[in-house]
Length: 380
Image 1 (spheres, rainbow, N blue to C red):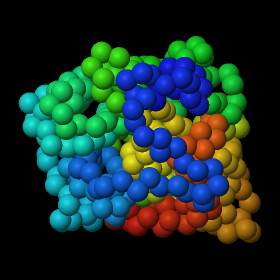
Image 2: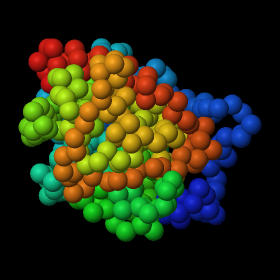
Image 3: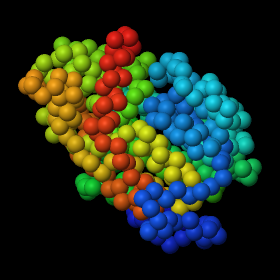
């Protein structure tokens, strides 16, 4: 199967080396979600203590897979997970730049989910512009070196790269389809540029070493479990001091702290596609299980657009009820605050049968009580 992210389309003529793969593309008339029924596999997940992986790992375990998780707790500090004692889960504390450890863990695995990264909210893009590039390149190089060696040994089937919607930071086509990262100007932020580079790691490893890959691009993950990062800088947003990370928890935190008027970045007309972590995890799993996803890339997102101002008012109403007037003021935006981020989600629906179905209303009904509990416990 051809690498569509490098051809700019859903599919093109198959690479001769991949034509022998059986055709597992889904029957378009067979249900809304068409999972490829595959034997359980052993998966190494790097960055296992991260936000999205907190949804992905239980998703994989529930589907019968065996998971080895690797993390050094550098982002949130030491955290316990509900699935730590699962019989098919093994956690290894270690650095994702440790090549010896990665080779040891990759041996015997069928797939590697390359998700470890230095990552944070928009404030990270400015404060750690160099570190985001350099540290994440080192992580990727170590991961791909180990994956290439495991592929040569005959066991590893695929590397799954968890990329980002930030590869489309400079996109001008909306909804933005897979392939637009090749025709758009390069990302402006070092974070977006590095995420695009992660996709070229996959391309290069396939071209030179025949290592199959799948690239997934989550859009605006929303869920519980995201805490104050160790390296987050306290930022004043009006009269509230918070560690600026992502817009949903930050707005919820300010509303719960009683900020009135509510401070938002810019005019609030930035468009996002807020997608539930559980939906994203299901999309990643479906991509991992599908042979039709080999050497392909996928936007994983809800199809619903929401402005920051619409989000803020929805959170306000859920906390304060309908009677209290919604008031806001605009703070100067960050330089890399993308105004329009709208993905084309047709490919994931057609190839994987994936759709993100959780509404923003339902997400907030889960997230707001969790943030309230964290706030009362002094963890935010």
